[in-house]
Image 1 (cartoon, rainbow over the protein chains, first blue to last red):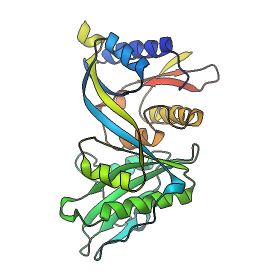
Image 2 (cartoon, chains in turn cyan, yellow):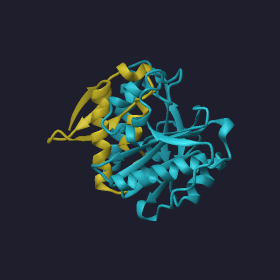
Image 3 (cartoon, helix red, strand yellow):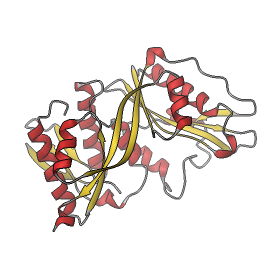
Image 4 (cartoon, rainbow over the protein chains, first blue to last red):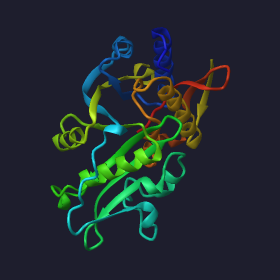
Length: 212
Length: 70
């Protein structure tokens, strides 16, 4: 919780590393806010090191959202609700049952699961938008444009459409993240009024399993 | 504070409740949103069957968690 004191943070980290070590996992990585001195100091004290850049987290005030950008000729967008006769557009070897597992979660909504098809019904781009009614926040995760369909404004269209749907659903603020070395994501997200809020590092270190 | 291990969708539900508490308490503090944990669930992982460590307060509300995924 946000009001956790340093002693409690240290206890959770220590107990957590022991717990993970009991599963035989020897090395762990985790993202840490660059501004979170308490967590950083606890991890440094446990011998963790900074392995590299994490993410840049951005927020958008829904009231500042831009207009929906035009969709390039020859493309059409749908929500998953309209494409149920097809396999889910995010099905891949790593996610063989993606729809089944998404449907098991409490926040997934097929009407916020957007996909763009080209004129031959090939998947060109997609974006999944999550609305949390309990906190009035939205999350964009993931966004993807297939290589053959880059530079046609598809990601901008699906992002601005999804943001608008989130705002209509009740989201007051919307979160998105990107890797610092991804200039395409950075340019797109900042250009639609997302504002950088937090930057993280990836920490790496050993659990009790590795130490014993 | 009570420690408890939760597995699979039980942990997803509990971490959702925890992160919703965090976001309700502060508009930006905390690294993750509940939806991100739910998105992570879309990939089957070897860690799905592991007990994830939670702490609950006297009212049964999640107060902290350590989630491990591969």
